[in-house]
Image (cartoon, rainbow, N blue to C red; front, top):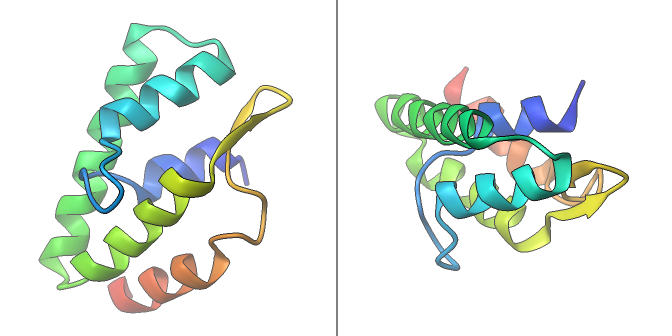
Length: 99
């Protein structure tokens, strides 16, 4: 699965280390050579995902995933995100919570 799609599906509020969704999306955009519409779509996707997590009482799990992504993402060959296994535990906890 495309790492950008995972990021979009998982992220949404500004939390933890102070990185906001829009800042994360701007950083991703710089790496992946997108445009303003990509930033807007990325931010909207994060906001929706966070709201859905909150509706399922999974806000803390969502925050953990976003913090991990915000702290560990980097540009690697035109793809922005953490190394493959870096946030796996947090992602699994969120997935288990929302199911």
